[in-house]
Amino acid sequence: MARKKKGTRRRRKTWSILNGLEALAYGQILSVGITGGGIWEFATGATDLGFRSNRGNLGITGVEGTGMSLVGTSQISLGDFMSQPSLAIEQMTGNFQSNIIPMAIAGFTTSIAFRVGRRLLRKPISMVSRDLVKPVFGPGVRL
Image (tube, rainbow, N blue to C red; front, top):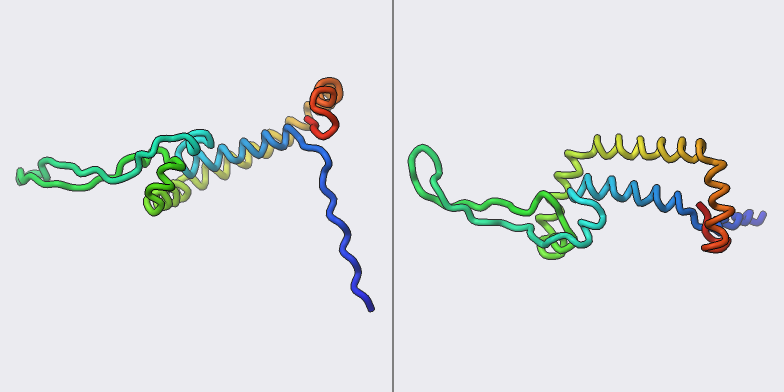
């Protein structure tokens, strides 16, 4: 007996502005939680991740010494990732582990907010989509 053909996958023919905004919100939550800055800051931030030598008194004994400290860890950028990949990945892993619960809560509340917002604003959204978005952007974009 011949195998049954799989049905063709159906994709939406339109692009939703609200779905794009929701995806951007999730991306921002993840970016802030993992890199310490938003999507824009990750792409355009300063390349300042590295070690800096410290010189000074090492304690009660009064002995002078040098040490190394990690700088630029507050916000990881794409430049940091390209110049110091191992340090950037280590810092991003630590940020992820320390921010996993706040990111999960923010993602959960974002999901609920978009779901409730779509239901509450169903009629106004359809009116704006019908009267403004379709005439301006064409039938391929919806709100």
